[in-house]
Image (cartoon, rainbow, N blue to C red; front, side, top):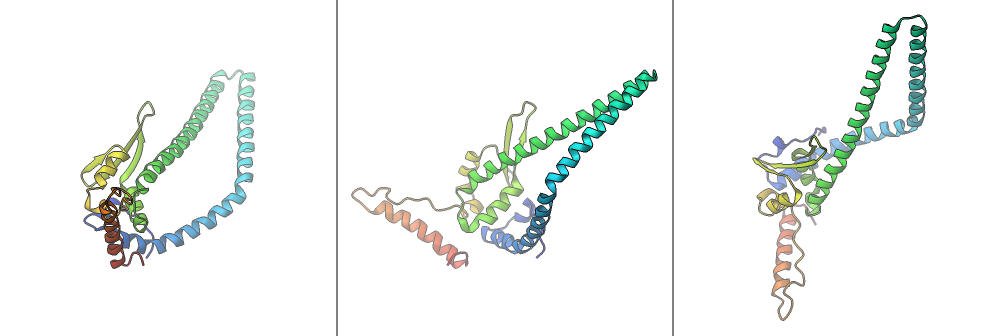
Length: 219
């Protein structure tokens, strides 16, 4: 199966097991794509230093050429042309600064988005990690307001959550997500004078493991 990015539409009306199966079938294509990208990245790493040095030298040469041209125009009394050249250079520098700022914002967004994913994924059973990650990739986003304030949005169907805490509470009762969550560790709870609490916890964990084993997800 060739790799393609799964979207929220792919998961509509799908059970956790079906989602896991979709992601598993997609992994072979993804692995091939990753291997190809890794090969390209290794080659890019080898050329990165020399490429950056070349860009720096080229930029310095460009600026020197602009300054020389401006000086020539001023010496010839072509003040209007010199001003236009200066304004063009200023616009170019502003565009470069904006591009660098956008690059920095995207790096920040990716970092914040990773924090959102990690916070939720900590509660997911390892057998459903690929399925949960695919769901989050399709339905979670981080944006920023005019003043740089962060906004988290996690969607599930027609529901929308603005914090991982709210989403995790919802996930406990949602059929799709609750089936992918790890069973809580209740060992030792209520152990004083009774083994009922531990037995209940063991029962929950046993049922989950049994269900996963029946689906062939664990041995």
